[in-house]
Length: 193
Image (cartoon, rainbow, N blue to C red):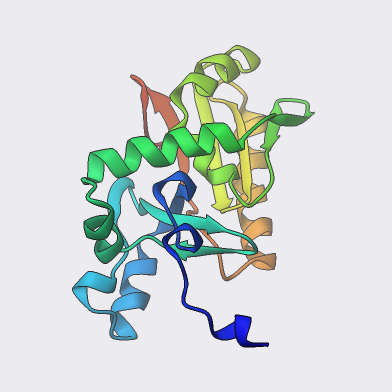
């Protein structure tokens, strides 16, 4: 019984080996400010594309715990080091990407609510580009759903746009963006086509 009250040891505390990236909507920061989170308790974030940002979390059993500026200071890391560590940890977590495809629409699945984080893995998008006609066009309506198609498939682009609306109807807590993204010059930008 007294084991419940034992002091945590350093090995019980979150470490750099469990930091993963998370993709969030910019409203995430507004919500934290509204509840009064102080500067040290705010998560480490970086702008990503349009209304999306990259934030970081400790991937703990059964939950993600925000990686804050306080955590970064305690671990002695810089933002570029955090990102490199998180992306490396993400790659280690993803043992296999399963692909569900229907016509010109493709949906990679990795589990653990990490699908949106695939946007950070440049090397997979080079491989995925061979599956589409034209530029890669991506939808990330929620953290666990990612669709892609080709810019030269009007049908695919329309279906992906409709999929965003449907996904965001059923998931309101972890919604991301209504915008389509396009892969250009090794990065992401809003697709206006």
